[in-house]
Length: 253
Image (cartoon, rainbow, N blue to C red; front, side, top):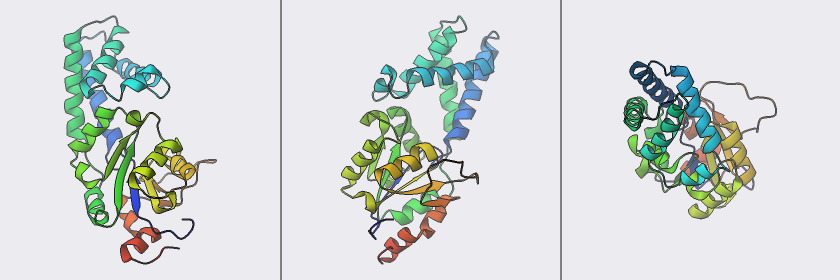
């Protein structure tokens, strides 16, 4: 941390930082694609899963027309679009089948989605002393539904979704927007996330203190942005010097 400023705000990434989203997404894809193959054997499970991911990457990432729509599409509207288009690659145009697969996806994801260990405990301890927020990339309704599903929305002063703002992490404009929302300076803010590219790079470019949640114990890749701190689990956040100093009411250095 530069300038000896006291930490007053902590923002978190959502997916695979506060919630186990990769696991839930895989469970949902597996359930939906397996059901598709059972109902229509000509649909290859892996082929359908790859098609869904490719369509999202090609049509809904930043810079596409679809990205702009992600601010307003409901979860089911978004999934119906992608699933319907993926099925058409197999020569199938069947709205009822599309809706059935979307329902299976939703059910499997809801059953698998859960908060990270220590998330509730850590947020409870931080809440009285810090401005807390989330900055997440993804479809607006999807991200907000996930936050509601794990019952953590009321822990945060601000929840910022990139598709609502107009650009994703690591763009420093999104972090600057969050700082203005919190009425805090970059030196007073910490960002915690699992992605070196989106979270750590974004925080560093914005002048925030960066904390890398490295739950899998990965080595820092060559040329990767270097985090200010690295933790293996969320509870270790409470041991970091600037947070300890703020909790103790002493000045951090």
